[in-house]
Image (cartoon, rainbow, N blue to C red; front, side, top):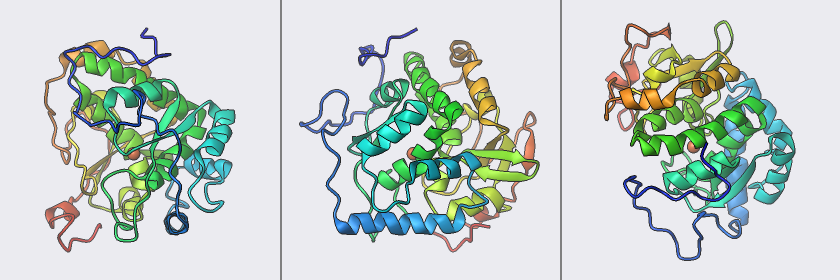
Length: 306
Ligand SMILES: [Fe+2]
């Protein structure tokens, strides 16, 4: 197994997005200190927190709600990463490190493999309060960090980081990216028969998709199958046409860790096989979506997320 104690050398033939590293950062891309937030920044955090708490109870996964409470993320203002890391560290051995927006894939995977979650430093403004595409500190900390208090999910995230290095060697980052997208960002869990909750950070950090993902008629809800998900395209700028549902975090962990990724990567086509709204014959479908939202034009149209 690869040694991740220091950042491994990236093989020369591996393509990574050409991101320009700010001069003051080292190879780990970690900011030496967390941003000094203004009073307005802290107020924005508090308002975002209050907004989410109106829609999350009964719709967010129990593990997520428990994580919010354990870390007391509603204590007021943007959490201080040092203190947060101490508390999270005592629970599952994870820490949270500040980074400037997006970082290269191989560095991101390396942090995860070492149980460090890289979180965006900046917070959105009032102008972008409703929707931002780049992950800010609210998305990263409120959306992702509570799930890292769950021991099984915490292990899954570390395995994902290790799997990232393997995917790069096979040039299959897009496929692995789809798995991240449909689990860590937009995953649903069936906690009891018919009781569908969200655990994905992309869903939980915004007000609209929480309701849409768990109860609207438009989207498909399909039981997660790792091979199928890694062949499925995804949209990054609108509500999802399809969500994948797990029965437990233990099942997600098992499906991922027990899978022979070498074999899978060798058999995958370079592009995606399935459109993001497709339902295929091997699917175990919980809800076959009407796709009404998408058919009416999606984001930017007057379509309601029904
Ligand atoms: Fe995210």
